[in-house]
Amino acid sequence: MEVSHKEPGQEPLPAIPAKRYFTIGEVSELCGVKPHVLRYWEQEFSQLSPVKRRGNRRYYQHHEVLLVRRIRELLYSQGFTISGARNRLDDAGTGSDASSSLPAPDVLRAELLDIAELLRTCE
Image 1 (cartoon, rainbow, N blue to C red):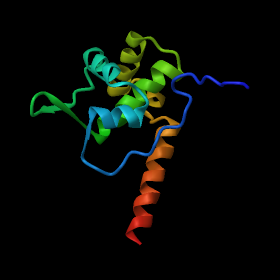
Image 2: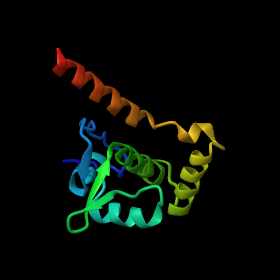
Image 3: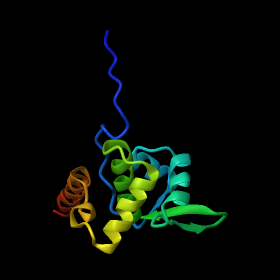
Image 4: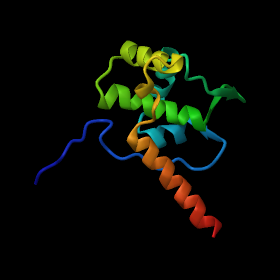
């Protein structure tokens, strides 16, 4: 009996539902990272700043879920360090590297699946 161990970042991510805010638990499931990792990344990446309400509960918006997926891809799939990923995201924000500002293929795929599902439910 063979057990396969996948590296983080290898498994496909679920589609992002069409809603305005996500809790840290939902983002954790959507992005394949644990909540404590998300809280750590908030300290390391200034671009990641979820809204905090009612007792300091975090609420992430859609663009922040995409950002978490991008950070995850840079760290887990592309092998960047935290500072390297931070620099890459900073470069993407200034437009110095156009290819780094493009969403990852798995993010695009998830978005297209979300749109297709929304269209099916509207029919």
